[in-house]
Picture 1: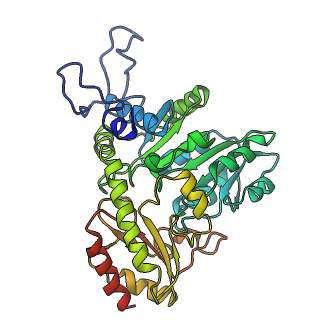
Picture 2 (picture 1 turned 60 degrees about the horizontal axis):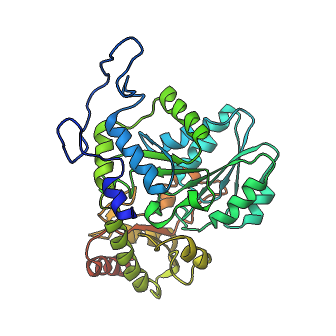
Amino acid sequence: MKFETLAIHAGQEPDPNNGAVMTPVYLTSTYKQDGVGKPRQGYEYSRTMNPTRKALQDCLAALEGGNFGLAFASGLAATDTILRLLNAGDHVLAGNDVYGGTFRLFDKVLRRFSLDFTFADTTDPESVAEALTPSTRLVWLETPTNPFLRITDIRAVAEVVHAHKNNPLLVVDNTFATPYLQRPLELGADIVVHSMTKYLGGHSDVVGGAVIVQDKDLADRLYFLQNAVGAVIGPMDSFLVLRGIKTLPLRMDRHFENASAIVEFLSNHPKIERLIYPFHESHPQYKIARQQMKNGGGMISFIMKGGRDAAIKVVENTEIFTLAESLGGVESLIEVPAAMTHLSVAGSQLEVDPGLVRLSVGVEHKEDLIEDLKQALEKA
C-alpha cells in the first residue's frame, strides 16, 4: 500500500467485536486471564501492552518501513529508553545541533550515570569518522536539525558508523521530516525516533514519543525496557496520534506549500541576515535535502540583522503566528530558540544565535501568514 493508504489503515482493522471502524480507546489497566499465566492475545497489564497503543505502534512501524514500533509518553521518554540500551562507560556521538531537551538529557542527566557524550558536525561524514572512539556504542543525529535545519546525508553517515569496529547503533530523530518526507531506516539507520507531539499528532493536543526498528533482537531489548521503565503513552493519547496520522500526508504537503511561499517572501527581506530552509538553494546541504526528502517541510529559521532585540520584537508582534514552544501543529507558531526551546544549551558548543527566529508554518492561508510576518518585521 502507498503511504497515504497506510496512514489511514495500517494497524487499524475494524474492531472484531462490533465492527467499529475507528480504533477503540481501551481505558483499562488490566485484563481477564483464561487461567494462571494464560492471558488473552497477550494482554496482561496496560503498561506492558494496550490494544489502542498496539494499533498506533503497528501503524508507526508501517509508515517508517520498519518491523516494530514502540510508543512512549513523550519524545524524551523515547530518547531516554533508547539510551538505556547502553552501559556505564559507553560513548555516544551526537550532532552539534540537536533539540535543547535532548542536549539537556544527555549533558545534565545521563553524564551522571557515566555515559560519555561528544557533539560533532554530522553533516560532514569525515567529522563523524574522526569523532568515533573505541567505546562508541551509539551515534545520534537529527536531520533536519533543530533549530538550524542542517541536513545530514544519512546513507553516508550510516556507512561510516557501521564500518567502525564496534558497529554502533545509528539513531535518527525524524521528527521534523516525518516518515512522509524521509525514511531513515531505508538509508541505513538502526533506530528512528519521533516526538509524536509534533507533526505525527499534528494538532497540538497530545504529547508522545515513538521508536521504530527493523531488527527483532533490538526490538525485544527495547520492548523489555519499555515495560520495565514504564514511560508508556496512554490509550487516549494513542488514539489522538492515530487520528492525527490519518491526515499527515495532506498536512505535510500544505505545510510545504505555505513554507515555500514564506521562504520566497523572506529570501530578500532587508531585515533578515540569513534565511535557513532545506529546499532553498542558499542552504549548504540543499542537494542532499533534495535527494533524501520528499519536500522541504514546514520549518523555517532566519537570523535577524538586529540580533536578539530584533528577534524578540518580531515574535512578540505577530498576530496569526502564535508565540509558543513546540511545532508541527496545524496552527503557525513562532519562537526565539535561544531564549525558549534551547535555553539549556546556553554557554555550550551548541549555543544558538540569539537573533535566530524559528517558524513552524501551519496550514492557514499563505497570504495571511505572509502579511502577518510582513507587519511584524516592519516593527522590528
